[in-house]
Amino acid sequence: MASTVPKILLDNVAKEFGGNVVLDGVSLAVEPGESLAIIGQSGSGKSVTLKCILGLLQPDSGSIQVDGEEVVGLQGRALDAMRAKFGMLFQGSALFDSLPIWRNVTFGLTQGRRTDVTRMKAIALENLERVGLDKRVLNLRPSELSGGMQKRVALARAIAPRPEIIFFDEPTTGLDPIRADVINDLIVSLVDDLGVTALTITHDMASARKIAHRVAMLYQGKIVWIGPRDRLYDSGNPYVDQFVQGRAEGPIQ
Amino acid sequence: MRPVVPVRVARRLTPPLSAAQMPASKPAPALLAPFAAIGRLVIGMFAAVGRVALFALRTIGRALLPPYYPGRFLEQLAHIGWFSLPVVGLTAIFTGAALAQQIYTAGSRFSATSTVPAVVVIGMVRELGPVLVGLMVAGRVSSAMAAEIGTMRVTEQLDALTTLRTDSYRYLIAPRLFAAVVALPLMVLAANAIGIFGGWLLAVQKLHFNSANYLTVTRQYMSSDDFQMAMVKAGVFGFFIALMGCYHGYRTSGGAAGVGNATRNAVVSAFVLILSSNFLITAMVFG
Image (cartoon, rainbow over all chains, first blue to last red; front, side):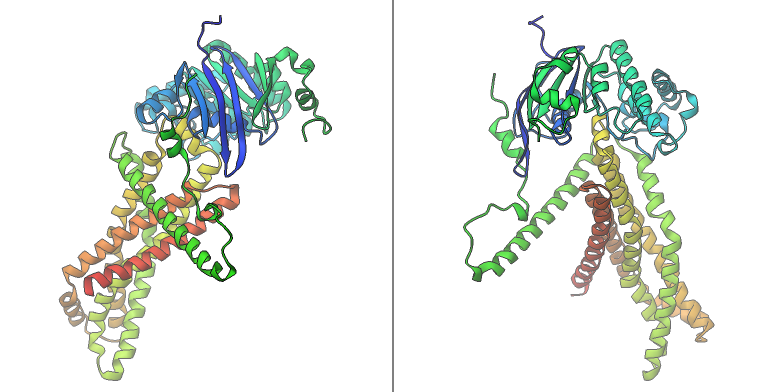
């Protein structure tokens, strides 16, 4: 399948903040329908990578292509059209706390306008049911839900516009192991059912192994290893070994 | 593979230097250090003014194009105007009464107590009404806007808006800015009326003025020019109140402490802008 265009292609992407190099030439290809996890320490540039792809941050140099089209420097309508392909699950859920759940879930469709209330509530309910919630939450506010439920609502919000690509930013952080596994299962089933391309950043090994087909490791702004998830624990790469086993001793200081 | 970020884009992507990041030139002789410090301060100030101006222009520019958010505008109008009325009314009535008492006490030395209604109406309409409303609303609204938008920034809600293809300038900033510009003149009208009423109440009840005479003099000294100036001031103050709240909220970084800083900076800068622009407008009209 060498002829297929990667869904997302990063080539030598670099980004620094005030002299602090965060991305130092990241190159990465995500194939259509693939689920890829990026692992790495806090501060290794995982979030910055996602934000560069989404155009929330502009890389200093390098190329980012989505469906074969360059996205760095896009503006206006072109940028908007590119973003329509993406959904994102934020680490802290990032639900809008001034809006009820149903308006949160349909926000990607209404852009915050109050239109077509009955239809939007139906769409909200359909997406909430996909993540295992029911109509009791429709009119609640985000602050009235537990962290795990907020995560599910955020997931429903990310999938509601039916994006082609979904980013998961540390989807299991802050959840207990059981709730974390529920979210992992949800992500796996959504990726399969909806046929989306998924890019997850995490430092939860159990989560990475469960939801990703391939895993890449980011260290000091570079991809130091990429391989199938089954090789995560026998990668032969000293950085990956140290990271997945959580050792303080090793090449990563 | 073609290279990647065109120079044009790269140049645009380079963030403007803040004063602290100015390229380090050769160390200046110690004698010049104070001048260098002043220079940095001045450059930093101009940079800040430029950032605020760009922020305001971007908001207005984006707000001209759809989608529009009339619901958000009305919501903000209620927040800024309606819910601020009680505190503004209280401030105005006490100030009007205190003003009447002071003019009376000071005027009685020159048997000029008859100037009380004239000074109350002129003082309220020209200066106290707009400034008091401006400061009260700045304290109430700039801080709330900075805290709300700042919290949205640190909890990634602003990024979430962007990924959900919603322009935060249109959705969050513009409704606040326009609502404040509309609400403030209305509130200043109300505050002027309540302040004049406060002066009348004290004069008639405590100082035994004749009510009908007091009102006749009040009407004589009410000028539409003064009201126009008050409305212009109010609109300008409203713009600054919302602009400072939104700008500082939007640029928040660094968690809860960052939100605290944004809130404080919003209120302080709104106060300074209100008082200085009040002086400038007064000086332009009467200078």
